[in-house]
Amino acid sequence: MKIIQLTDTHLMPRGVSANGVDPEAQLRAAVTDICARHADADLLVITGDLCNHGDAEAYDLLREILKPVPFPVRLLLGNHDRRPEFIAAFPDHPRDRNGHIQSFMDTDYGRLLFLDTHEPDVIGGVYGADRLAWLEEALAGAEDKPATVFVHHPPVRDGIRHFRDISLHDDGALLARLTAHPAGIRHIVFGHIHIPMSGTTPEGISYSSGQSCTHRFITDLDLADPWWTDGHPVYRILMIDHLGFRAFTVEVGQTPTARAPICAGP
Ligand SMILES: [Fe+2]
Ligand SMILES: [Fe+2]
Image (cartoon, rainbow, N blue to C red; front, side):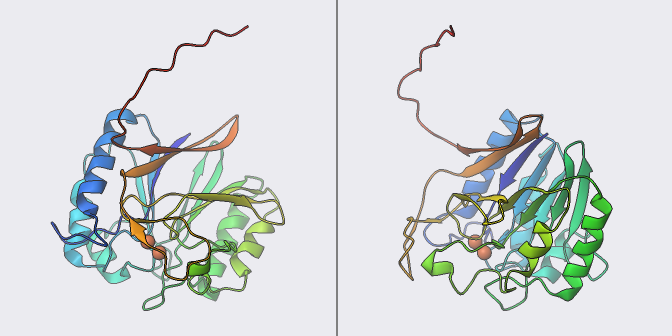
């Protein structure tokens, strides 16, 4: 199974930049590359902070940019999003009975879970009792199938100073529930931190973040107020198959410098 992950696209109304980068140009370039090179993908997931201020105009722009994608799309909300404006622009997008943008998808390689940690006017994430109740049912329904989790806010401790107080505000409840799934968690995929990171929880669950498609941080673990910077539009190819879970980062627009020679095997 081939999944494309975009994250933290932070779209603004047409032509408006955010933190010195044009998010529309970045996303258009990424989507053009995805459609040209990965039309065989099974799914596109954008792991939140779809729009920078949650403007209706920005969600309309997102819908327009995603129109050429020839495979299913799941969108997650981040702290920068606004749920009512999102639902107005994507009224048919799956959501749970409480209106949270949560859903699951069963595949040959287990159940994919798409979680909603957005809480209005909170920069960090919230995953309260009603959302946990939905997750309880979704994990119970997965039975003996492993789950792969997509969520905006990292449900793990990332150790980055800037995110110390704006990560998921749940005292570890979400991670504890995921860890208890008897068939296992294949991987936790998140966004929010804008830089690539991967790790393993003390219990042995692997996780990684995508790099923002638009502005990203100059990586610094200790600065409370790190600098934004620009760069190529970025997405990830997530493969889930008989080899397990693998994630590859693609930077759109890299310049070739020299060709790697073909290396013959023994
Ligand atoms: Fe973000
Ligand atoms: Fe975020």
